[in-house]
Length: 263
Image 1 (cartoon, one colour):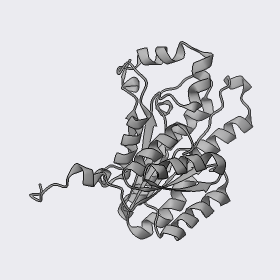
Image 2 (image 1 turned 30 degrees about the vertical axis):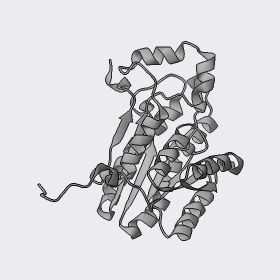
Image 3 (image 1 turned 180 degrees about the horizontal axis):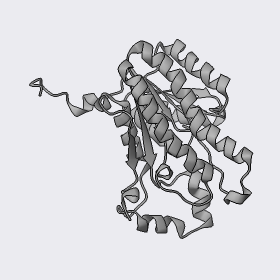
């Protein structure tokens, strides 16, 4: 036990001076988490495929007094990923936080799914996170510090029909987190995953419209009796990105209102 005066919690969670790359940041949970990292003081590099959708997000963060930039590239483009991480590190001399959030899914019954459907989802939801982690680790190892966050899902623990590749990719992320954590811990780099439950986003808006009973059905199954607020996921991301989580690595943080704990 230490007799040193403890640091105030606000200092432990302060990201001032740090650089964070957030993929899939133009909307939904990626945008929510980017806001939280920026509010904690980080310079947030917003990623998405289309610069025109990222620019208003960057401008909004700057209007709020935060620091933000854009890095438009497709996370499934290996050369673009490697070049983007190298460019960020060269421009700022550092990359402290990777939040790999971008992904996709295909909703089809198994017998209608194609090899291409499978490959596209695995590439976007699993391989891209591995590749970005590898490139970010090159920078973080040299600095002796870093935080890698991969966004998984409760579908890494439980499954719904029709999203075979998505469930496989998110389950694979959990193994990837463990493998990266044990390899990078000696270098001061932590690796963790966030596993969100149900949050209202643009990504699930079509599902909620097509099945009006879906949202209340999920809320009824969730011990918290509601869907999550995206800011609640943002707070979890800040924790895993901050000094407060220095001894937390190789884990998956569920943010699901208790859904996966319930029978």
